[in-house]
Image (cartoon, rainbow, N blue to C red; front, side, top):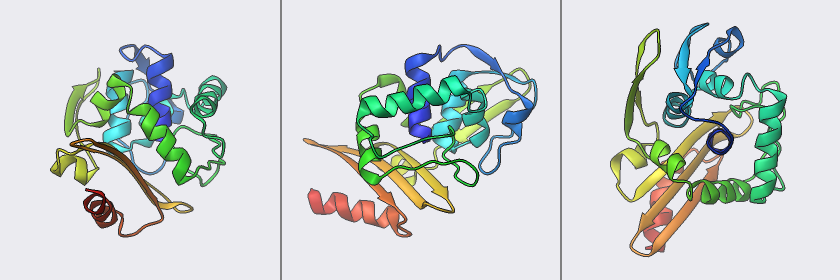
Length: 201
């Protein structure tokens, strides 16, 4: 969901525009960078928080707390890509309250589409990123350990919810290979991805 949130933001909004964090954004549960009410921060910085740290408060801020407009654009983008077995009701992917559903195949389509966008790749491939808002300084480290430790992994995204369990999306490029690898509910996902890559090399 956060990959789709990122590409929807990049394609439809000014990523260098400053936005104001709301009370609803700060109430987001789970992974967070602990934004504060009234904080002013630009979308590009929030995109780094979204992709490197999987921050749910950043997802809320980018989507104006899952506004009707943003969710419409998100689902229309999914349809454009061909994600016909996916539905999104929030920008974070959390599924405790709202209805979010997708498949490994649809996520692979999304990752392939997103990997063609230079802005998206530039953000999601970063090993680390530092920025500041009007209230504090931030420093983010990429959660995707393969991206951090192997130059052939260009970008990737980790994820977890109680219903989906672990989700891992990885883009691997080497020689003439350009692979998108998606695993869902695989407790051994890091090792599986390495095994898959080695087998296909």
